[in-house]
Image (tube, rainbow, N blue to C red; front, side, top):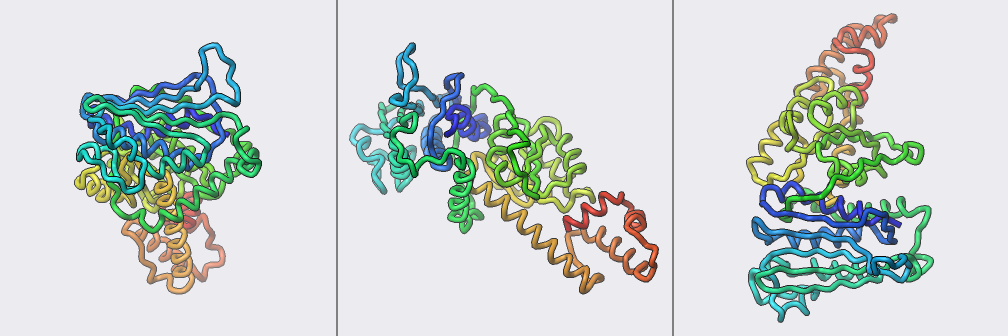
Length: 410
């Protein structure tokens, strides 16, 4: 089971940055108490992302989008398994013609009103949403008024009385969810390198969530370490939760702290926001890529600025990848996994080169200079029986700890 309130808040927060640029107010309302529900998280992410993207896409500047989580019960009524969870997504967009409303969940239906068609989309987006909702034994409805806006209401049953025993995964819920997410990642892997046209979401009056780190005792951290540099606590929590099942996640609130953590921890990959106070993501990435201790670490930049110039600027600083907010959760996981795997393969190649042809190794300029220095020292002292790691580190101009970390990374 999942606590649906923070999960829905985090999904909504993925649209915050672009909203600031468009001048749209995004409001989140939810109960203070926990509301747990049995669901497949990756399916719920797809549902909310589709509905929220549609609501925000053509809401004009100065408009509003409301995301509300509530339970269908009287004020003083005790919550029971017969009650339902209601998620409302309401916008002040152009609206949908009454004649089109009964058909918007049909696959490939083309709305008669061009603006409504563009705003709500055609194809399989809403059809998929409806199928996923019904898979969870729920329902979805829509009301709209031309010139005033549209409201989608998602209703999901609470408790587990409606579920078959095989549909419930109590103890293994989190892990089975991640295994399921991997199948989505594999499906997406063939197309993640295509340019993604982002949904155009909105500004937020969302209160920050508590930055809750999962207890270390309950997590078996794998070898790969990801450093997350993000000043927004909600976005940081959202990305951390996406990655925690598969990676150890370190966090920094700005570029300055990120540089220190990168130098001290030597992560396998860095994810950094672009828009941060003080040192922005471009400057942070450039420093990472021009420092010998960190130049080998792959960097993914996240930004709300979707222009080609912004992307080019990021890539020119040495960024290995670039994602526009709001991003698809599965796509981020795939890109992280691919970059770490590419770096692992590169390490294996360098190891073979060091063994077979130490004077012919090639790399990026910063890494090449370092490797050339190390290899030259090894070749010059290959016959010296007392030449040790400390001597090699001294000739390379680094500490023994840094030498070991750098060579492992390369």
